[in-house]
Length: 110
Length: 120
Image 1 (cartoon, chains in turn cyan, brown):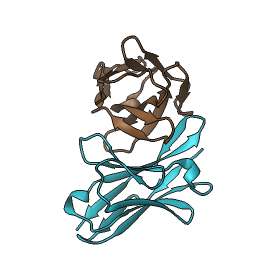
Image 2: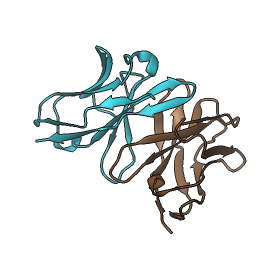
Image 3: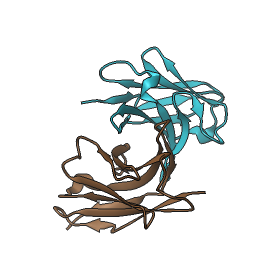
Image 4: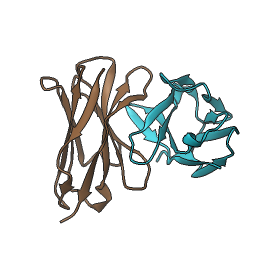
């Protein structure tokens, strides 16, 4: 069974930089998995931040960037702000029409 | 600008079938550019992809739910639907409908979500 792994939680200081990762329980994440990233605040639908590894969705500030780091997809947030405190999810396209979400990372800004 | 809106019963009895509809307004589901997906989120937990339908009616399902899920599209009504049979308390969640870009494989538009509770 495919499991997409994310750090359960992370903290960053205001103005700091944080990198969240998205891996596989078996194998490496590559661009072929079309990794995308979402931000979700409580009670709201997810908001798309990054798709196809590194393309920012419309209206997303360039403080948010996506990449492949080693064998994982990564979301880097630079100059963290208080309103970046949210849950962040990655999703990988596994082929055959199937997508798998990671478990999400709860980011705290303090 | 296309918008998605989920509708359906907010309460379903155990062992019964959950049925939800997503209505697309301001655009058409009859397009080769997108798939139409269902995603759920149990209270306090993460997101789970349920499945997807193309305008042609082709479907793709999460293997762990495949035996209980049916997703269909009605292009005449600009809607797509989810049926999940034999529900249990574990199926209680906020259910989102979403649009998935067929080339870039990502969810670019989400409905607001609808909470479904499973209880007798």
